[in-house]
Image: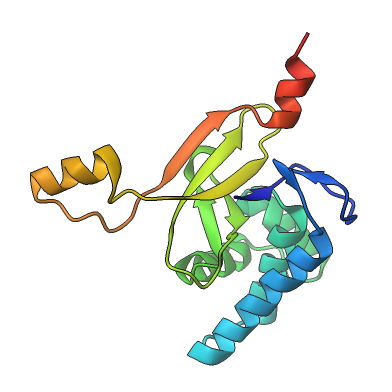
Length: 172
């Protein structure tokens, strides 16, 4: 499971979402994977698309389009909403970013370049998001789809609850 936490300071020891990791290496790995895939597939990885992905990787939490736009504006990429929306649309379409429907926000993909069905655990308190993999073709949903003659092409699984940090804070 890979996490997208509420904050970070860039240190390897920081608790980030639901686990600790080396945040700088995480950002570098995500950017390198996106650059390599775009080069391999001939995708235009423009500077605004790169900056948008970098923002989401650095924040390590779900951000709304207007939050992304504010950060892009601060970095000189313009202030019109289509700037952010077009970059986010490209990143989602190519699997670098996921849209979290519950939050109407976006988060960098924990497994870019792999075909997978993500499932998101969203903390209702701090809004940190952890991504894991689901297997919709297996289990009750897959059985129901097969029984109905339905072929599942895409699922969005979002569970809401409390992350370990917020559970700890709420404990008496």
